[in-house]
Image (tube, rainbow, N blue to C red; front, side, top):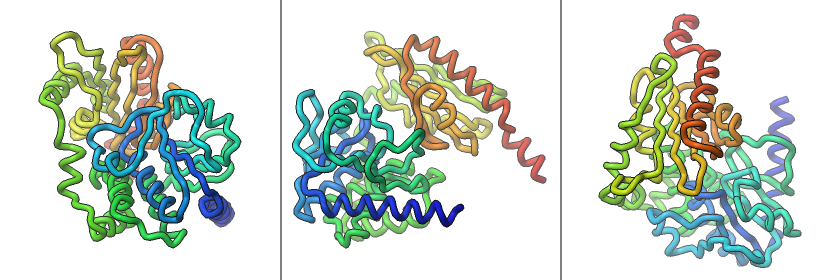
Length: 343
């Protein structure tokens, strides 16, 4: 069965490479609120296609975050505002495999007569809807897959492409501290440094340009911390900032602080959205599958890092998510219990 799966995956990747070789005009797109992996992979693929003499466009549902301006200065990221898509033969969907994750771009992409190519490292659910896929759920980042594509096509990434791959890797591995960091990840990161990437400069650009209110936003979030399931579950629910309060658009710092608590296995960060509803970010530092939790609320991601967007009030969302998480944790032995059984 493993041999059959490996053969099928190899065939799928060859189909993907054929689309990249034979296509002439490409549309690169990503998920809503594109993160460093998505943005970095797009930069690397854009430069790769340009080096092959192809025409490429990058169109996303949301703008690039300011900390990635070293990439947006080099690549023409556009934000979809309605109307026709640029003329293209192939649409490349990076860092997602469910079309709804493109928000307002889903309908025009679905209606386009172009071939659909998925380049991703997330688990897919349901029947494949694409024409070809270059997918590896064991890869640490989508940008790592673009690196492999460049190798398969015999293309040497330029400096911008190298910065894109490095950005993908460091943001999706938490600067090499997450469990998805493996030997290939470290080797490729090293190659990108050898190609001219300055880790110190990239770290400063991504993580050391916060506004003065950022620490106060983190403090406001941590003040709402609650523990559940005998301390195995840590939960923060953050309402929209009132006048004079510090806002917090990204909860990664909060998630990292709470994962450092020894007893905690799962961390949930629920942030109320100004436009209504809530954004859930779920993280696990053990073998608890937060992807299963997120999918119960229409989201998804990875086993140790997933998210979802929920309708309704913050209080209702928190109640429902906590109830489900506690239920799943109840069916999942605590780390100490597992060690006792294994010994």
